[in-house]
Image (cartoon, rainbow, N blue to C red; front, side):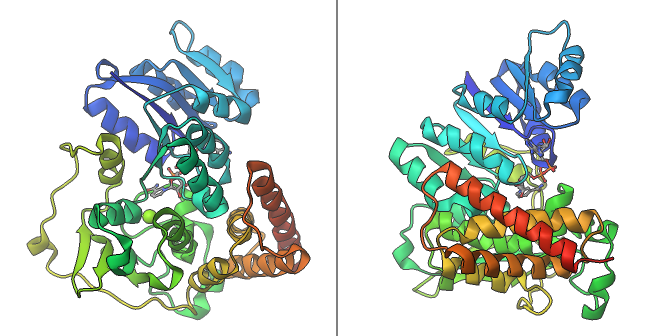
Amino acid sequence: MRSVTILGATGSIGESAFDLLMRSGGPDRWRVIALTGGANIARLAQMARALRAEIAVTAYPELLDDLRAALAGSDVRVAAGPAAIVEAADMRADWTLSAIVGAAGLPPGLRVLENGGTLALANKETLVAAGRLVMGTAQRTGARLLPVDSEHSAIFQALGTDNLDHVEAVTITASGGAFRDWPLEKLATATVDQASTHPNWAMGQRITIDSASMFNKALEVIETREFFGVAPDRIKVLVHPESIIHAMVSHRDGGSIAHLGAPDMRHAIGYALHWPERAALPVATLDLAALGSLTFRAPDEIRWPALRIAREVMQAGGAAGAVLNAAKEQALDDFIAGRLRFPDMAAAVEATLAALSARDGFSTPPADLATVLNWDQQARQFAAGWAARNGAR
Ligand code: NAD
Ligand code: MG
């Protein structure tokens, strides 16, 4: 029986993974080691009972008693807090899904790699904040990383066993998010609710807002760089409102291989779950005739400065990715809390990158988790201060 762990089981990706496990035999087919979640204790307990998990862990120590009560009478053990999540990741599983949102996903994911395990990575922040460390760890221990972000799963599938030397460009697509067609001058009035709707994908709130600002795509460009080792100038972003083509690999001989599919994350999650096999998945087959046409536009860097920031961060190298990720998370918190207007998120991130690079330089990529978290802390602190000084009042 294959054993699996889901970090971030109660989120959007986690729910899709749960659905796939339940539809493919549930606890009779999968030995579920750990499920982790946050504040939604009722759902975490329900999932743990349904999959007969060995342990359920909430990120919040103050919710441990609630979790214990919700799992009373079952064999599921309980634990709470960030350290307990890392301990859960430390329990060996054949396959671990990293589906926590934000830099909080880095410590448990890294632990899986240190143990030489298989990590299916939805948490792109892991690679943005600590790409060198993460890839280096996997290489050292023989751990396997499988992409779950839809664009990266698409690249992984389109690339196959081909050599990067044959690749001219890698293109990832972007729907353009909630404000793709808004007049630019209206962006400053964008509300959290407006930014939290996505034309094609149903996702967690944070990544949905990041799609509207294109910070999600900025992170994914860096994820492409770190995961596949593609040179920054060979990574392209293409606005594709229908979200049917997820990525395309263009070869030097003029041929391009694109990956198409309905915008349903169960494809990428299921592909990683069954890899290297392909399994039947509950994802609609494409009907291109019904769709009629697919459309494309060049990305507009005035509307989406995050794309320019991504290039600058790759150019800077070193710890710039950790700073970008943390500043973006802080700016997003500030936008959600009403302390920053929508376009000011990019301004806050740029100011943080400029200030921290002037302070310490970014020259060396962090070689251990403590160094990444130290940069992360500094960046959050600066970005929060920037928002307090320059934010909406
Ligand atoms: P979500 O907000 O729906 O779920 C996040 C999960 O992480 C929940 O289980 C939550 O309880 C847990 N969590 C939140 N904060 C935590 C913390 N501090 N410590 C421990 N656990 C915590 O997010 P999501 O949309 O499922 O996204 C998860 C990850 O996958 C993100 O990195 C996102 O960028 C990536 N991703 C998501 C999608 C998507 O379709 N939703 C697509 C591609 C990539
Ligand atoms: Mg994606």
